[in-house]
Image (cartoon, rainbow, N blue to C red; front, side, top):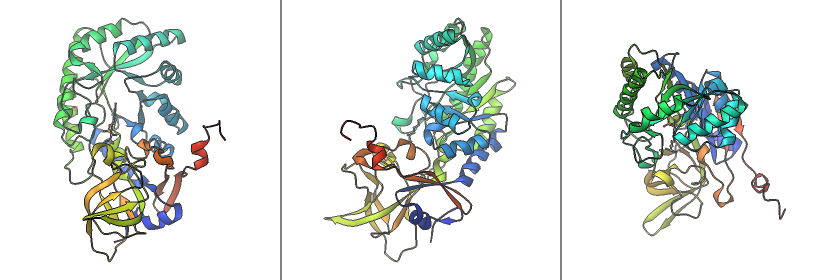
Length: 405
Ligand code: LLP
């Protein structure tokens, strides 16, 4: 079977643009976005989490669909604005916002800062005072629920660095209400990523709603509830949660409260809209063990090395060779440089392999380890393939190292 992205054979794209190559489907991006708007309705603000994939063309596409953005750095804000995103629909998350980033975001007129600590409240208040503004803020509350996902991407437990503890939340809101250059807009949480069950999300929502009611009794009225991102995708054979059922439950829990709902999905909007194409360099065996060595590596897609994450891998073309069990590895000099271990694969040198579910936290987490160049990226729309990121050059890699050039 020949594999396609929309109407284009992946093998043709690899020939045209070279490998390793990221390929994204515009239709899949649109479909994933529509799944949210269908489930939640148009009055819920979707703020795409830029960190999942910050390619400017992808941001532009989401902006054209009406999306807002969730950013975690000044750099991500610059990308959103460069891609035509609306600052007024952009929220700024993260535990360590610098003074320069806060000033930049305030001047740009973002919708809200998701604040994670009291010192951050002070910092935003004093910058807003200096600029003669009132900064819109929400407090990220840590609801202390177990997201039941990989410990590195679980963020809603007391032991995590994120957010303000539930027990301290009311006091933190009272403190914020006393700061003259802040405007309290809402509340937010984000309990983790790649969640495959709705229960932890719903539990977090219930805890936040109870807090919202307690705050309202104290005269602190909130305009929005932001439930973060975290909805998982199918990498292997996971059953993921039903978006429509989740939406219905959340809406029922909101009841008659006049709260605008905000979500910050990342992975579920882009993860399965992208693949990484890689060419087999060699097949070799060390004793009993077989290795398929490909031209992509951990620097291009580090999820397997970092989280032992599963990515489905298959040959882009039908082949006569019979499948065998092998580790699929890259050329980087680290034992951790693998995409799959003990995987059934039919492949020989020269074949093109497709690493699936590579739209999220793949290109965006890439590095230049081993002086490897960031891959090119292509966005496919029907029969059209648009190069949306050129392959990096060694000259670009070296250009900041002036002394010896
Ligand atoms: N909002 C906040 C505050 C976040 O920290 C994140 C992700 C999101 C939204 C989006 O979550 P999503 O819908 O994508 O689950 N590199 C890891 C994932 C790290 C997630 C970090 N925060 C991975 O490759 O699995």
